[in-house]
Length: 192
Image 1 (cartoon, rainbow, N blue to C red):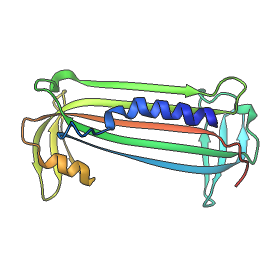
Image 2: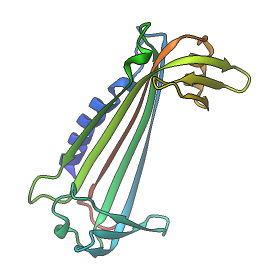
Image 3: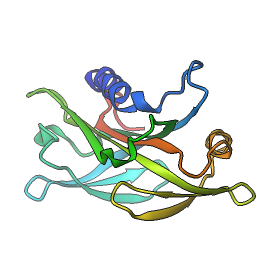
């Protein structure tokens, strides 16, 4: 899965770029988390593209390998599959007047080359500017309106995001970017 590690790193950097806080941007906050899992292929149906996996803890999981997963016929029972999931969120003060800009979506995908071991990397980043209605510090509840007029409230749970939210006041415009990226591929090391 060497191509996947390099490709995943590039895709993750592109998609998560909005989630990085810099020292020169004190009016921003970001966090990112990564989850990795391995499993063994127990069953494979090439017609339906269903793959039954057994996780390290013994749980069974059935997935459908979408058309972006090339070379599915090369998977064998007993192959070790590795999946990596990254999600991140970033918030930063937006220039005034940006709340009407709407939502911007960026997607990316990398597939295994023909003839290589099956694998795919997909990711999406969604950015939107929201207008702050209120922030309740004791409960860490931020209320905001979207460009289409919807009013929503969320509890800010991450400490780095709470610190940023404490500085918000009604009328502030904040650019929020949510990013997800997922990679799956066959490990060359065999069964665990």
